[in-house]
Image (cartoon, rainbow over all chains, first blue to last red; front, side, top):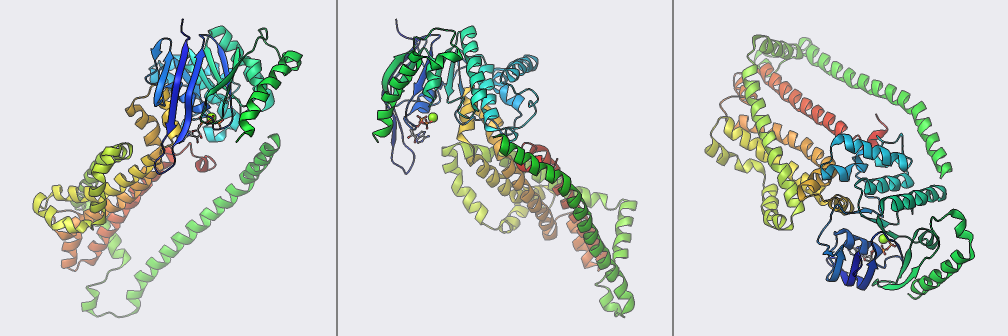
Length: 257
Length: 283
Ligand SMILES: Nc1ncnc2c1ncn2[C@@H]1O[C@H](COP(=O)(O)OP(=O)(O)OP(=O)(O)O)[C@@H](O)[C@H]1O
Ligand SMILES: [Mg+2]
């Protein structure tokens, strides 16, 4: 049986006009099971965002196969949604109407839209900011709007590109718990890019370490910590051993420049 | 984080306390000075002809504010102004509306499509570099002396600022935002509607402001050059009859028209710019 998400020999080179081409992905292989929580860590610029964009259907690889549920990914679809690294909020839309963007494009009725957005705005702790514009929000608040927006369309696959990077430590902890709850309840498949090894271990079933650019899958770690996970796990021996192992794998890629 | 927030809050609070009062007074002060200088000018203009003696011949070329005011009053009271004003205003608005209807979509298309851009670019550059007045005799020949030629002249004048500004604004679109809406399954039309046009709006408004100036100029030029009727025609004919007050009256109506349109655009801009940082503080 082939995996739910399957990438084989994915190659992607950016060719910006008047500049050197940049190889972002080279022979990139990946298998993700349905309902799995997979984190990806790797050096900055190694092609993590690029890969998520390929999965999202926004970037076309030069060669290689990328399948989702047995079908080749040809373009964007409502079965996937991304929490963007740069937030990507429409500055002329309020928090509420940013959250409702995907629903609007799906043609969902206003009333239902309002219900969904209100529930998610509550979940990410932005009640009272519904009519604020993005420039009136802090970085962490913007990021939470991006999270709510991705969840609004209730996608099967959630692509998260450093979704908690701009959050303060406490909000981050809360959001991690929320994310795990949603993931478990709604049986979503999550691909989670982060630079925080702790976070990757804490959340994931497996953690993939990528090489430096051009990005390749270097090693995959299975995280066999029991679920539901709790905060105390982070101080256990097992957790820290894993952390060290992953860090060692990652360190080579960062230092060997 | 909390510290910088507190700091920002302090600054905001200070602004609230000090600036509105001061700007309020400053605004009042400058309005006062502005209005005052106009009143003084009008008074001087009114009084000087009474103080010095002007020969009857020279007097033909001059008028006074009270005469202009009286002429304007009569024109509106008797209704003689409405026909020329109506003709000029319809030439102006039809030409401007057409320029927006063509310039905006065309600017978006050219900005979004490399092929269309390559196709249209030489024309736009050449056309825009040519002084538009050059086309006037030809346009009069083709479209006659009625409303048609006026509309076309206004259209040509107003089109380019809108087209070029829209194009610039569209080129400046944030790729991340396009990707965001695409990821939710947006069509090219949705992308234009949800990202490209709102993003270009400040540019489009600036273009519109320029276009209004060009449109008024178009009306004036068309009517000075040769038209059957309109405010400009009225002014030219009045000048021929040494009715200087009527010429001034036409001038004032034109100026009022421009000012009113500019104010309208300002209102539009304030409405559409509520989301922008620099506007938030003023509301
Ligand atoms: N649109 C683009 N045009 C040209 N080069 C690009 C483009 N997008 C990404 N790249 C290049 O591709 C490489 C991979 O970029 P990507 O954004 O996928 O990295 P990343 O792993 O997400 O990094 P980070 O952890 O810093 O977010 C980088 O070297 C980047 O410069
Ligand atoms: Mg990235």
